[in-house]
Length: 230
Ligand SMILES: O=C(O)COP(=O)(O)O
Ligand SMILES: [Mg+2]
Image 1 (cartoon, rainbow, N blue to C red):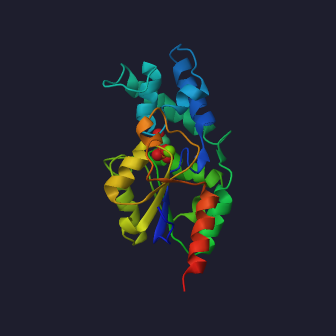
Image 2: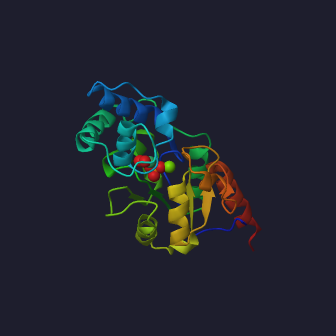
Image 3: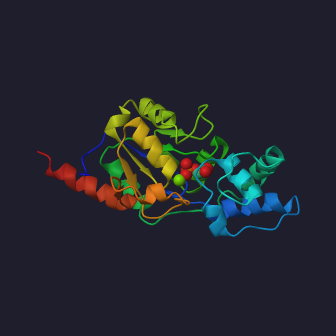
C-alpha cells in the first residue's frame, strides 16, 4: 500500500492512541472483587479488550474470550464496571510513544481527524481530555453513539460524514480485528499499529494488506508524500 494524503485520518482509541489496559484491568478486577471472584492478570484482560465494555465484562465473568451466551448477572457486573472505571479512568492510562508527535504533525498538515472507538461515550471524551488530546479531533464516535459498533462499518461512515469527507478517502488507524473488518466493510484503507490489543485474532495478524506504522511514522510518511506532490 502506498501512502497518499487522505481527506481525514480516523483513529481507534484503546490500544491505538491510549494504553488503557492497566485501568481497564483495575475496573474489571474491582467488579469481580464485588462478587468475591479472584482477580485477572492484565494480559488476560488485554486479550479481551476491543469489543466494548459489555463484552469485556462478560468475557471476564466467563473467563474466556469466545462466548456465545452472556454469563448470569452480566447486567449487574457491567453496572459495577461503569462505577469502578469512572473512578480509575486515567490513573495509569498513557498515550503510546509517538502519538502526540504524530497528532501534532497531522494537525499541522491541516488534516481533519476523528476517533472511532467501541468504548462507551461516558469514558471516551473524559479519557481524551485527561490525556490532553480531545482538542485534536473534530468528531468522536463511541461504542454506544449509534445502535451498532465496530466491526460494523456504520461508526466509521458516521465519523466521515460528520467531518464532511467520504469514508473511502479516509485512513483508519487501529489495533484489532474489529478495526480491520469495519474498515474493509466501509471501504477505508487500514493502518495497523505495531502494538495494542489484537486479542487472539490470528486473522488480523495474517492480514498483509494493512500497513503497520506507529502514529508518528504515519504522519512523517504522509508529510513526505505531501511535499513530493507538485
Ligand atoms: O472498549 C473497547 O473494547 C476498546 O475500544 P477501542 O475500539 O477504542 O479499541
Ligand atoms: Mg482498539
